[in-house]
Image (cartoon, rainbow, N blue to C red; front, side):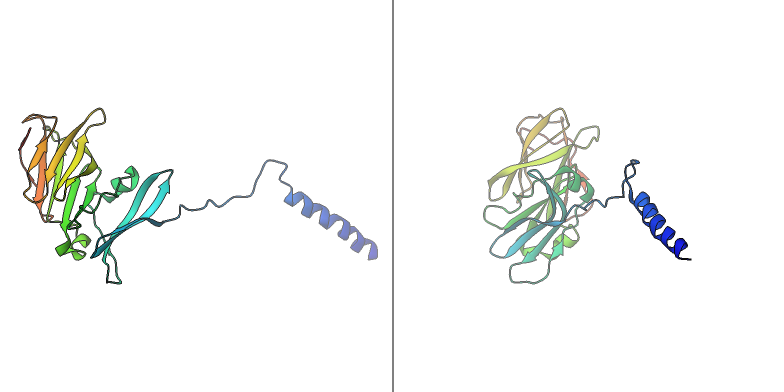
Length: 213
């Protein structure tokens, strides 16, 4: 009996060692760390705050959730964009969101869907439905969607942005108070406009153009 016990004490550690040996090329499965979602951008005016959640890759911001709240409030309202997936994948720049005087908040509807503008008077509740006071998007005469990229604020009520295809982009100025759009590159009939008030179904403006509209 003692011989059997001694034999087992010798054999069992040997098989345990073989079972743990990775020299045959098999490696234990590794768990990849998920991309951490965090506050990647924060900006505010005297009355409201803009909070962007997502992740960064190098210097590019990839937003996954855009929220607005009152400075004096404790709850955040999430912005419902027209095409949120395109914003998550394009690294859209949100650093321009507030107008210089803080009266307006402009947010992207989607990479190919243009912009929506909100007055601070209707914030933060309006962002939950994506219902801004107005929106605008540029597209081709044949109906092709153009990508949009913000350039900057010309003044407190006019934005400068670019729209176009992958091969070429064009510059526009949009007065968000009176709705006037100015093309700095294209002539009348070379592009089309999609626009609408307060998030209602859009109405094509039919090849309005510039310089001027």
